[in-house]
Image 1 (cartoon, one colour):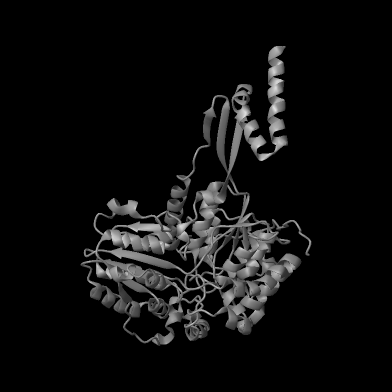
Image 2: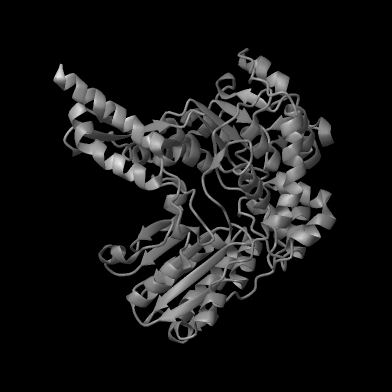
Length: 551
C-alpha cells in the first residue's frame, strides 16, 4: 500500500502554484462555440452508434469515463448489456456540427391509465427504469481504485493522462492560490443571484440544538455538527456545470465543513496530446471560489473518487463524497463506502428524469418544454407525462416534435424520448398515485390550484408547483438543491440539503435524582438481556447515592 502522506499543498503565490500544475485558467465563455465542434463530432457519432445499449450513466457524465470506455472495449461489451447509450458531454454547437441533424417527428408512447392499473405486471413493466448492472462496471473501477490507494498522486496523474490526455505534475491546487477568473458581469451577476438564493435556503435549514427532559432529572439533547472534510464531484469533460459546483459547495460552507475538496475533470488547452496545457472551466472555478471550496482536484471518474476517499500526497482524505456522475463515478462511490476507506456518500445515482402532471389548462408548449428540459440531458434520461382527462395530448405531441427538432442537443433528446412515455388518467388522484409509484427525481405539477394538492405527494426528489414553475429554476437558481435521488430512490432518499453535510450527536445527562428514578428500569432491562455489566454500572451508582444519603 502507498504511504498515507499528509496533504502538503504549497501556499505559494498563485502564479507559482499554477505553474507547478501546468494549470491555465482559460475563459470558457465560448465553450459552446464551433471551436469544440470538430472534437465533439466524433464523440457524438460514437454515442449515437451505441444508442441501443443501456447504462446508468448520469446525463452529466464526464470525459474520463468515456475515455475508459474506449480503452476497455471488451469489458464494456459485457457491461453494456442494457438498451441505452452512454451519454456523453457535448456542447450545443457540437451536437449539430454543420447543421447535419435531420428533423424527425417525435412522439411519446401513450398508455391508458385505467387499463394499466388493472394489470399490475404491465404497469410495472411500463414504468421500469433501465437495469443497472453495477457488478460489471465495478470490475472495471476496482483496479483504478486499487491503483490510487497504493500509488496516490502518481496513479491519479497516470489515469488522467490516459483517459483525459492531460498531463499533470500534481493533481491538487489550493483554490485560494488561484486568481479570480475574468468573466462578463452578466455571468457573474447570474452566479451571485443563484449563490445568494441557495445560501439563503440552506441557511434557513439550520436548527437549534434540541433538549427534552424525558423524566425528572433526565435530560436528552441532540446537536448538529459539520462533517469535517467533504468531497464534491462536479462532472466536466466538454460540458460546463457551475450550477453543480454551487449546489454542493454552498451548503458545505453553510454547514461549516473545514475542508471542501472539489473534483472536476481537466481539459486540454493549447498544444497537442499529452503536452497540451491543462485548463478547467472559468465558470466552475468562479463558483468554487465564491462558495468557499478549499482544494481543487483536477481529476474525474473513479480515480477522483478514490483520491478523495483514501487521500493522497496532495489530496486531503474526506469523510463523505457528494455529487452526480456517470456509472463509473457511481460505482466507485458505492464500492468505497463499503471499504476500509471509511467514507460516506450522498446517495445512489441514475439517469436524470422528470414526471409532469398536466391538466386541461396546461399550456402544451410549456409541458413539452418541461419534458425536453430533462430529455436533452442525454440518451439515458427518461421523461414521463401524466395527462389528466381533457388535456390536448395531440398538441403536446406536436410541440414535442417541433421543439425537439430545434434543440441544439436534439440528438440526445430524441433518443431519450424513444424510451419515455405518457399515461392518460381520469383525475388528479390517479395522477398522483402513478407519480408516487414512479417516485420521480423531478415532479412538475402543472394543474389548477396546485398548492391545494401538494399533500398528495409522497415520493419525489423535488416538486415544481403550478403553471409558472419550470424545473429549470430548481436546476439553477431558485435556492433548492438540484442534487436529487433518481431511479426511484426518492422512495427512501432525500436530495442534498444542509443536514447532508452534518452529523447529529445525542447527549444525555442525569442528576442523582434522575438516576434514582430511571435506574431500576435499566437494571430490569439489562437483566432481561443477560448483560450484567450494564446492570452493574447502574447498581453501583445507586448504591453510592444511597450511601451518601446515610452520611
